Amino acid sequence: MAAGFALRAALACAVMVGAGAAGAAGTHGDPAPQLCRDAAGRAAARHGIPEAVMQAITLVETRRVSGGTAGPWPWTLNIEGAGHWFPSRADARARAEREIASGRVSVDIGCFQLNYRWHGSRFASPDAMLEPDLAADYAARFLAELHAETGDWMRAAGHYHSRTPEHAARYRELVARAIARIGGNAMASKHPRSAAGAAAAAVRDGAALARGGTADAVRPPQAAGTRVPIIVIAAREPDVAATAGAVQLRLQAARALVPGLLRN
Image (cartoon, rainbow, N blue to C red; front, side):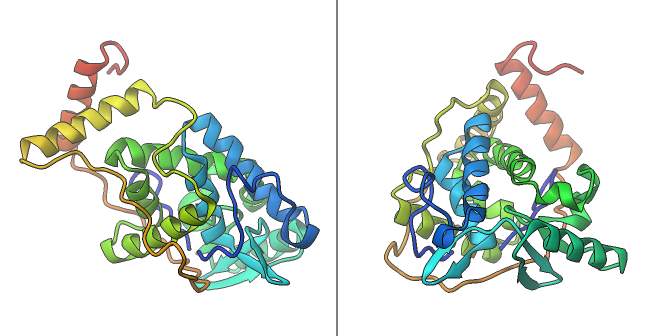
C-alpha cells in the first residue's frame, strides 16, 4: 500500500462481480468467493466507497479460476512473490504462521492481500488478517484516505497498489477492465464523502487550479473487452510521507473549510 498505510496488492474478470453479481454463488457453488464479495460490499457501504472499486480490487488481488469461472478467494497468500490458494482458512493460517515464524514476513494475506510486514501489527494475528470483514474494512479505510488525497477513485486504486507510477498505472488498467465488465461506476458511492474528505479534496483541487490545472476526473475504462492474464504482485514497500510543511498547509485549509472539525 501507500502513504499512511502502505499496502500493495496484485484482473482479469471472466465473470461479473460487484453489485450485480454480489448475490451470485461462489466459484462453482463454493461459498468462499462470496465471503470476499460480501465483505467488500459491506465495507464499501460503511466507508462511502464505490462498490465496484472494492469488488474489483478483491478480485484482482485473489482471483482464482475453477472450471472456467473466476472469483475472489479469501484463503489466498502471496509469499515473497509467489501466489498460493488454499482450500480452507485453517490451511492458509497454518502456512502463514509457519512462514512468519521462519522469518519470511513479506506475506500478503486474505481477500485484500494485506502485507504482514507492513500491516501485521494492526491485527491481532495472521488469522485476523484472513477474516474477510476485518480485511475489507482496513482496505476501505485506506482507499478512503487515498481518495481524500487524490479526489479520484481510479487514482486511489492505483496508489492502493503502489506509488510507483508504472505499477500504479498497470493496476488501474486491471481495475478499470473489471469495472467495465461489471458495469460499475468508479465515481459512484452510495454514501456522501465525509466533511474531512471533502475538505482535503478542496485543498487538492485548489492547489491544482492555482497551478493552472484542473481538478482530476475519473477516466473511462479502457479496452473493456480485453481478457487480462492473471497476475499476482506481492512485494510491498512503505511510501514516503508528505512533508511536514505540506501536511500543515492541508490541515490549515481543512480547518478553514470545516471549522471545529480538526483540532490540535
